[in-house]
Image (cartoon, rainbow, N blue to C red; front, side, top):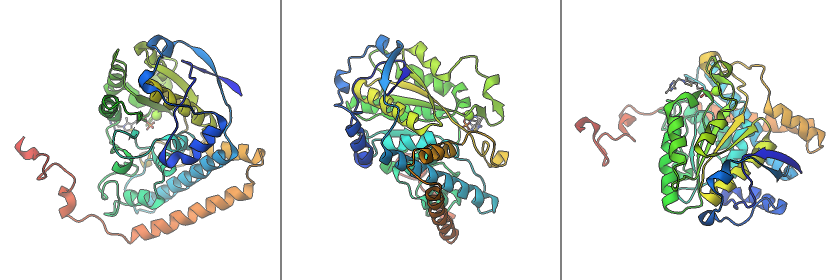
Length: 385
Ligand SMILES: Cc1ncc(C[n+]2csc(CCOP(=O)(O)OP(=O)(O)O)c2C)c(N)n1
Ligand SMILES: [Mg+2]
């Protein structure tokens, strides 16, 4: 046990469902979950922001640590495969989540996954591969999107790499304009609030994007007195906005501090540590389910291959969360160095075979350009607006 400083006390937590059975079981064993009572959430706005030191377990069971590590390796191998596909000319552009695995994987494991307002909504940005791998996305579906194939389940081969969309899991389409997801998430959170659902809406995005008005909009709508929303607003702070450094742009100490002016509960987490991140996310998600109120959580993460292929997609000297976690697991004798190599090879083989298969798959037909747009469908005809 150790103490973690957070902006509110949390005594109860909510059981996770569906695909999170493994983590739920483990959490129950640890006494990390309890009965949800969002409708009777007693915490006042004052309580939510005043600083309180709480007891937080500092570790996770071996089984869960290994599950997180496995998904982190799989995600990194996939991202590196996507970069190779780009560099060999089989794709036009790469952007992705290499360096954010210690944040993204725990998030994916904790999501209450399903379709409709009774399940969590995910409004993510273009570094979401680790989360989707943890949720169960097959590697090959990421490669189909990367190579713009008609078989791509997210967009039919019509969007950028890492611009996922999985309606069956409430993963709303990733947009290229940054930060708009913070505004859109208000809508699903309102729907969840109206239904008194125990589900929450989750947003991910970068540090530089918080300069956009959409970020301020989300803080305002999330915290209207008496109408607070079940929103988990996260910021992955990698200290860069393409080539603009964080230190030249932010007068505030932490981005999360901006939530305090709105009475929003806040926390700042080392997003390169998957255990700290898992525990923090679990605590904050449980708080939102229990009280129906928002949280602004900032995670410090790495950017391991630059911004995107636009900046070269070459490895950069930043902290590698995977190497750090591997060392920890080896030190604890949970794995041997050979196990890591074998795991890496297994996923590397899988990713290579998937890329080979995707190369043979068809690109979208010319006629399909009108599919999944408003034009000529039952919703609207934009030409008549
Ligand atoms: C509205 C809008 N403005 C500018 C851009 C160009 N752009 C793409 S990514 C990016 C930087 C985003 O940095 P950050 O929010 O920190 O996320 P990171 O890429 O570092 O994860 C910018 C400015 C954009 N896509 N959309
Ligand atoms: Mg950034």
